[in-house]
Image (cartoon, rainbow, N blue to C red; front, side):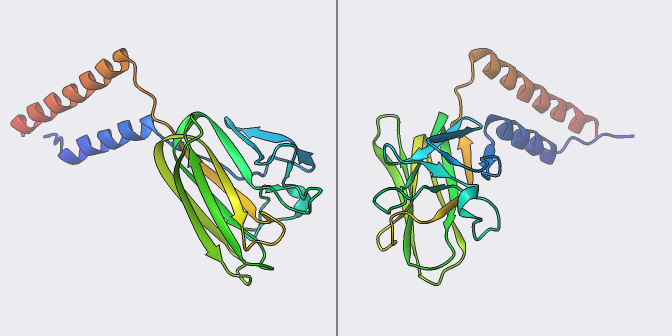
Length: 202
């Protein structure tokens, strides 16, 4: 019986290797629980209100248009909902979040990404109508993301009155140690040599 070692096999191995270097994480806020919080941390991401002294909540304000609990700022003493901030331990190379509300008013939803020096490095936004009752996914990619800010702004009524759900990020790719690089290179060379030998036998 002849064995065949195809390029597809090598391609599959390369994909697995790449997947091991970076993977996405999702926070759906189902674990936040009832109550108001100064901050909430899950999987190395810390969520806070973007205004000092304001709070965040989840279950107390009902469910998102997704039908699940989401995160939202707590209505403050100026009758405004604060925008939100997420600090990502170790940084991220991409971030996305679902934003929306059950209609009522038009909202300019946004997602801004900052580096560790607090410089804005990328941003995206979308204007939804006052009859829009869906969630919209905003996404950004940059290797230097340290934290993001998100929510809605004018023409939103009462500040950032939108829910956030399904916060998703890909951790910044760590620099492999020399021993890991040597091991990976050795493994790929072994695969290539095996492929050549098996093709000759075939």
